[in-house]
Image 1 (tube, rainbow, N blue to C red):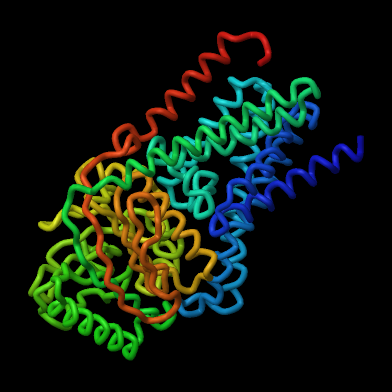
Image 2: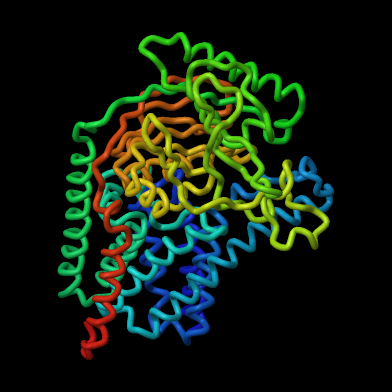
Length: 494
């Protein structure tokens, strides 16, 4: 009995660690599925009472998030934003652990609940998988979620990720759980039934890959819209030095060079793209060049400070419009009840307030769906912008001082968002990844990471809508309702 208890704890820790490694930037679902098998094993009633299942499932979630989100530790040191040196590392550790504990509570609760519903029943598996997928979509609307099982298929298995065009990241998360459940059922089945479960799971895997390939082939059809050529500026200015006078001059020189290059290019270039937070508050362009500029920066809305993507009309020095960041980083940009705190926000520019939820930027050349920094994790918001008329997507970010691990995760999410919406995506990031992704999730162009660079990309406008653009989470909600009804009317174990 003592060994059984230890095995449960080892399964929780080992499965979570394996899941954390399997998530992007590795992005290999075949590595994730054994971790999900271990998670399903923790839901069994023979694994102990509900409280014990909760703790072991929580350990799985804690380990997975601490591994996949370890890039948070690269925030240290925080002295450049006014945090005293002795407090910097403790604050970073507390933030990292807090996110891990939040995951532990959610996964632990899921494990305990599924254990009560008899996890061996197919109706329970369908319901539990759908609830998990919907929870990831809902969490992506809030401030603490970055990526989950829905992102696990990229960059390693683009064929499987093609299903995101049908049901989004939530459906992909549910699929990972169902594949793991099939393998778990095969392992616990009697020898005479084991081959049946293995064949059924293999059929699910093959069928999903074929369906994903068909959806990707549909996304590769002629776009039917015009092409735009943009110069992407990657300044590679360390965040800790961004607002120093020398670095601001360097940035403006880079921008002026890009404006001149765009103005004289043949064939014509639409404009210039700069990443999140490039321009200081009220900063005009260095040149009144006859090309459009889309640049990260800051603006005032009344007394509130907003982080925005600013739009400069051709020939203008001042921004005439833009779109404000909606999901602001807790502590990093925004602090609740900031007036009661000593700091107005742990940001180099002070407290940032969120803007409207819509991610659609209207412009004469064709509307764009915009994600500023970790808004890229919210696929539903970009699908809504696509329904409203976005013809391509723009991801604007500043990922310094984080390591290459986070850049890899950002690139995987960019691929996923392109597949979901059937839109080409351009990423403009301070230190990378600055890249071009087509509507099938293929990375076509990429600037060198961590180095100043200017790249020319050609993005295709598209107007067709994917099933996910049209229906959102509707199919996943329907699956959850049908599974719940099936379980309610069925009395015999599946």
